[in-house]
Length: 238
Image (tube, rainbow, N blue to C red; front, side, top):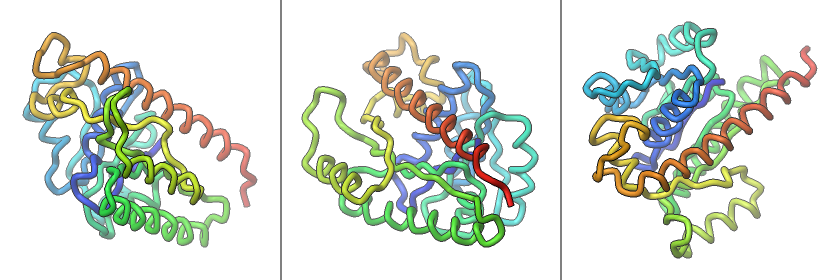
């Protein structure tokens, strides 16, 4: 399954979402590759400059010219291929979205983030129209993921409640789980370790709560993956 993580706005949580999910899925036994298409290469930095024993593969030498070749070379090797995209619209972003089975759009509960997320959704819809000209059965599914939310039990901001309501009323699909603001997620990048490798490190904060959050989100992703795979198998081919 190819999963593009996209939002034109920088700082929305794309790389955090990618690294958290990729390392967790690898930890529970899946084969996982990350194509780091962010010009800042945060996940390549995490992989090459740290001491994590996580077995995720990371590929960073990618551009709009070689993207499909790089992706095609990984399809048969990995169960999950994440593409961490740059925070802007580009040919590379469009190509990654056109090749994705699922696009995750991380968004914080703020007005500017929501406006940028709507641009990401428009790109997905436009790419789907383009690929359907050649394959009428092709669909590009997407889900909004609300990030940097309060921990469970803490007060939820008015902006988050309004965002959730607006998404529901507009029929825009989203993850039922959110990605909470956790010290452990920051520590993963600071210490260049997986969540599991942070065990016993006080700098990780409430590690158990962070792990529960990621586990719930990963279960939901796997469920979506399974549902979409079944749908694709049932679609008639022209």
